[in-house]
Amino acid sequence: MPAPLGKRLMLLADFVHPFVYREGFPQGVEGVDLVLAAGDLPGYYLEFLATKMTVPVVYVHGNHENEFVTEGDRRVPPRGVIPAHGRVIDEAGLRIAGWGGAPRYRDKGHGQYTDHQGRLGLARLAWQARRGVDVLLTHAPPTGPHAGTDYAHRGCESITRFMNRRRPRLVVHGHIHEYEGRKEEYRDAASGARVVNAYGYRLLDL
Image (cartoon, rainbow, N blue to C red; front, side, top):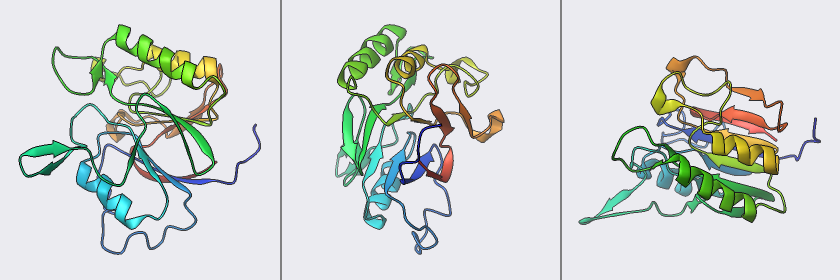
């Protein structure tokens, strides 16, 4: 087991959690160093987090095109938060690689990618991460125990390939909802990564 880094992370995905989205937030939440949002969260919620938290809020998009906010007749990215899709960033003393969206499951739709796009995009991300990363933040899960039972929620082989190449300490994903009955986390045997489903809201010590 790797030595603890002494970081406390707030993880969110797929659901506007009533404990978070309230006037008194972040009362009751202590010592958070970084917020990681793993997709399919509305833009107003991301902006709410940015106004309430005094630490970086890093996000990737999901597959439902709801992270944008409306300004007049335009839809724009949320303000005050840090997009991580397709790049490696350094925040709160951690190196974070981000990959949003989900493997394509219908002909049209925002936030979906073909197998070819996934392979190419995550290979480029792995090149950016050649000096290593602490966290891989994705929307879709890797293949394995957290993959969904239906085609739209299947695991992504290119995410698994990235894990095996770059061996992040932590993989945070969304996309897999509570009805799937998947356990919140597991240890990936091949890469050694701790894989966590961020659905809803949780705190995690790294």
